[in-house]
Image (cartoon, rainbow, N blue to C red; front, side, top):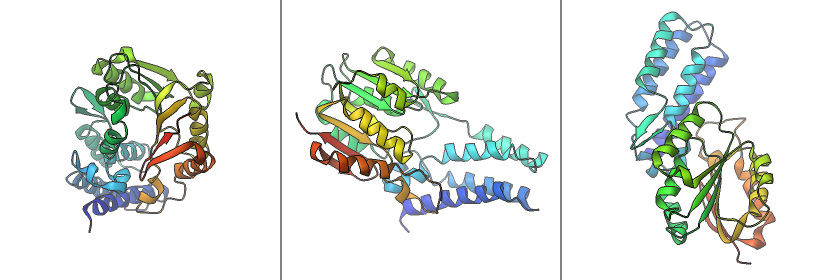
Length: 291
């Protein structure tokens, strides 16, 4: 079996098992939770730093085992049928696997960047080190992609990035800490709020050389983000959509999975005469036609 498929299959199986436990716990549910915990920790030996770059479309399942497992453990701790002994095991897992791990100067709970770094380097090479480059990011989470751009593309002191996100809960504090650790906070503008609101507040003129769309993954929201931000992209500018291949990358069926690809395809069809598709894979990268 392809290593990527094998890892993703194991992770998806773990996700399905815990979902079933939460929906219909049986008399052996506590024993099943302990077994599940053991299998999650065994999966850690398969998912190593850097491995996601070789997983292709399956990275969406495998590279975020840390975050998904932690969320599941926290939900299990709230279940009324979980015994004291099982709670001890669950809390032990949380202690062994902190919410975030140290990556150089930064702390991240997940990794969505490894799988796309090579594509970004190629597509964004003309922007690297250029003065006065402007980037807009819709969906910033803990700052990992923004920091990558600051360190690899927006390297001129005059370059800037605007980050749009709800900036809520624990991840917002991690974003602030990571941006501060980058030393580039003076070149980062935070705009807190729903993208549907914030994008309408920005001046309706082509300001940005790069726009990264990674906010809500619901089809309509993705389409709305694309339409609202398109007017802000300079002619010749680059727009990147994340998770276009998310639905196809799932190993097990999910009835309520978000479908950003539907919104992205609708936008690509509507704006087809005004853009060039540079890449269409797990992500979509396009270039706005010159004026």
